[in-house]
Length: 136
Image (cartoon, rainbow, N blue to C red; front, side):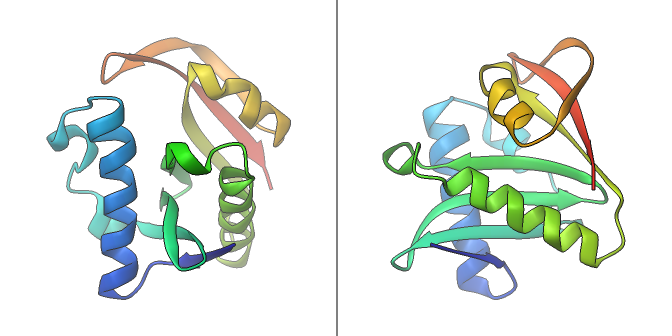
Protein backbone atom coordinates (compact mmCIF):
# COMPACT_ATOMS: atom_id res chain seq x y z
CA UNK A 1 0.00 0.00 0.00
CA UNK A 2 1.14 3.54 -0.64
CA UNK A 3 -0.27 6.88 0.46
CA UNK A 4 0.44 10.05 -1.47
CA UNK A 5 -0.22 13.73 -1.16
CA UNK A 6 -2.62 14.16 -4.07
CA UNK A 7 -1.03 16.75 -6.33
CA UNK A 8 -1.71 15.66 -9.89
CA UNK A 9 -5.08 15.41 -11.60
CA UNK A 10 -5.28 11.60 -11.33
CA UNK A 11 -4.51 11.54 -7.59
CA UNK A 12 -7.05 14.29 -6.89
CA UNK A 13 -9.76 12.60 -8.98
CA UNK A 14 -8.98 9.29 -7.24
CA UNK A 15 -9.45 11.03 -3.87
CA UNK A 16 -12.82 12.41 -4.96
CA UNK A 17 -13.91 9.04 -6.38
CA UNK A 18 -13.22 7.22 -3.11
CA UNK A 19 -15.02 9.89 -1.10
CA UNK A 20 -17.95 9.86 -3.51
CA UNK A 21 -18.31 6.08 -3.25
CA UNK A 22 -18.01 6.02 0.55
CA UNK A 23 -19.93 9.13 1.57
CA UNK A 24 -22.27 10.15 -1.27
CA UNK A 25 -23.23 6.67 -2.44
CA UNK A 26 -22.53 4.52 0.63
CA UNK A 27 -23.77 6.86 3.37
CA UNK A 28 -26.12 8.88 1.18
CA UNK A 29 -24.56 12.19 2.21
CA UNK A 30 -25.60 15.03 -0.06
CA UNK A 31 -23.02 15.71 -2.79
CA UNK A 32 -22.93 19.41 -1.91
CA UNK A 33 -22.11 18.61 1.72
CA UNK A 34 -19.32 16.20 0.82
CA UNK A 35 -17.81 18.47 -1.82
CA UNK A 36 -18.15 21.69 0.14
CA UNK A 37 -15.74 23.91 -1.78
CA UNK A 38 -12.90 23.61 0.76
CA UNK A 39 -10.84 21.06 -1.16
CA UNK A 40 -8.84 23.73 -3.02
CA UNK A 41 -7.61 24.98 0.37
CA UNK A 42 -6.83 21.49 1.70
CA UNK A 43 -4.03 18.99 1.38
CA UNK A 44 -5.57 15.87 -0.12
CA UNK A 45 -4.29 12.34 0.54
CA UNK A 46 -5.02 9.24 -1.52
CA UNK A 47 -4.19 5.64 -0.57
CA UNK A 48 -3.51 2.97 -3.18
CA UNK A 49 -3.22 -0.80 -3.19
CA UNK A 50 -1.73 -2.11 -6.44
CA UNK A 51 -2.44 1.28 -8.08
CA UNK A 52 -6.14 1.03 -7.13
CA UNK A 53 -7.40 4.03 -5.13
CA UNK A 54 -8.82 2.59 -1.90
CA UNK A 55 -8.63 5.39 0.68
CA UNK A 56 -8.84 9.16 0.91
CA UNK A 57 -8.64 12.02 3.38
CA UNK A 58 -7.95 15.72 3.54
CA UNK A 59 -6.23 18.16 5.89
CA UNK A 60 -7.56 21.70 6.32
CA UNK A 61 -5.23 23.68 8.58
CA UNK A 62 -4.99 21.24 11.51
CA UNK A 63 -8.31 19.47 10.90
CA UNK A 64 -8.35 15.99 9.38
CA UNK A 65 -11.50 15.24 7.46
CA UNK A 66 -13.19 13.09 4.86
CA UNK A 67 -11.29 9.97 5.94
CA UNK A 68 -12.69 7.17 3.79
CA UNK A 69 -11.86 3.58 2.87
CA UNK A 70 -13.70 1.61 0.21
CA UNK A 71 -15.82 -1.14 1.80
CA UNK A 72 -13.91 -3.95 0.07
CA UNK A 73 -10.62 -2.75 1.59
CA UNK A 74 -11.70 -2.13 5.19
CA UNK A 75 -9.99 -3.97 8.06
CA UNK A 76 -6.78 -4.11 6.01
CA UNK A 77 -4.96 -1.19 7.65
CA UNK A 78 -5.77 1.39 4.97
CA UNK A 79 -7.17 4.02 7.35
CA UNK A 80 -4.38 3.42 9.88
CA UNK A 81 -1.74 3.89 7.20
CA UNK A 82 -3.53 6.97 5.88
CA UNK A 83 -3.70 8.54 9.36
CA UNK A 84 -0.05 7.75 10.07
CA UNK A 85 0.96 9.41 6.80
CA UNK A 86 -1.18 12.48 7.58
CA UNK A 87 0.34 12.77 11.06
CA UNK A 88 3.88 12.63 9.66
CA UNK A 89 2.97 15.23 7.04
CA UNK A 90 1.45 17.44 9.75
CA UNK A 91 4.64 17.27 11.82
CA UNK A 92 6.72 18.14 8.75
CA UNK A 93 4.69 21.32 8.19
CA UNK A 94 4.96 22.33 11.84
CA UNK A 95 1.62 21.28 13.28
CA UNK A 96 1.58 20.17 16.91
CA UNK A 97 -2.03 19.00 17.19
CA UNK A 98 -4.63 17.45 14.91
CA UNK A 99 -8.39 17.56 15.36
CA UNK A 100 -11.14 15.66 13.59
CA UNK A 101 -14.86 15.06 13.77
CA UNK A 102 -15.20 11.29 13.93
CA UNK A 103 -18.36 9.48 13.03
CA UNK A 104 -19.37 7.88 16.30
CA UNK A 105 -19.11 4.32 15.00
CA UNK A 106 -15.34 4.77 14.38
CA UNK A 107 -14.55 6.56 17.66
CA UNK A 108 -12.76 3.47 19.03
CA UNK A 109 -10.56 3.31 15.92
CA UNK A 110 -9.35 6.88 16.49
CA UNK A 111 -8.88 6.29 20.22
CA UNK A 112 -6.64 3.34 19.31
CA UNK A 113 -4.55 5.81 17.26
CA UNK A 114 -4.23 8.14 20.27
CA UNK A 115 -7.05 10.60 19.63
CA UNK A 116 -9.01 11.84 22.64
CA UNK A 117 -12.73 12.72 22.56
CA UNK A 118 -13.49 16.39 23.23
CA UNK A 119 -17.01 17.59 23.98
CA UNK A 120 -20.39 16.08 23.31
CA UNK A 121 -21.83 14.03 20.47
CA UNK A 122 -23.26 16.19 17.68
CA UNK A 123 -24.91 15.73 14.30
CA UNK A 124 -23.19 16.45 11.01
CA UNK A 125 -24.95 15.43 7.78
CA UNK A 126 -27.51 13.69 10.02
CA UNK A 127 -24.81 11.35 11.40
CA UNK A 128 -23.59 11.27 15.03
CA UNK A 129 -20.05 12.62 15.40
CA UNK A 130 -17.64 13.45 18.18
CA UNK A 131 -14.75 15.91 18.06
CA UNK A 132 -11.37 14.32 18.80
CA UNK A 133 -7.82 15.63 19.09
CA UNK A 134 -4.27 14.34 19.24
CA UNK A 135 -1.05 16.03 20.26
CA UNK A 136 1.73 15.26 17.78
